[in-house]
Image (cartoon, rainbow, N blue to C red; front, side):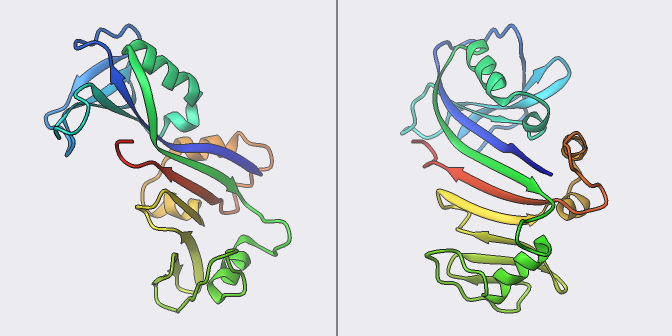
Length: 219
């Protein structure tokens, strides 16, 4: 069992019209904007939420025609992301500028050469497995910060590791996705996507290797 998804898609664009008249999508203006935009809309396709649309920048240093769109998480698992982005750009008459954040996820239940995924994570925690070119030290606290390595623990189990800071351009993490869904927020569409993949074993936990790629906010 091995599958690859995008898990976060967020991009900026330049609007070419001041009044939106989309044919495929609809916009619902929310009560409050965001820290960087005066207007926040929810994008719908029929009754389904597609994402959010930020309009009219607050800071004067930003292009007044700049907008930002973030896809709803479910879109990554239920639709062709490329086509959704393409349709949004065309329907709102936008000029694509850049992806401000992309998260790529590889989900799996076993690692070749290791007895289990947990034994691999334990190897990282013990220092027996090191990220090439990175010097790391690991202690036994519940959450450990040392150089750029972070650990998550649940008693004797390592539930996740991460390399790189959240604010950096690239952050890599490996964590127990099944446990996260169970304890934080269940997302049935993710479990349904797994069930459709050949080799998936519902009796075993799914782990995720995730790459979070961010560009400077307004580049």
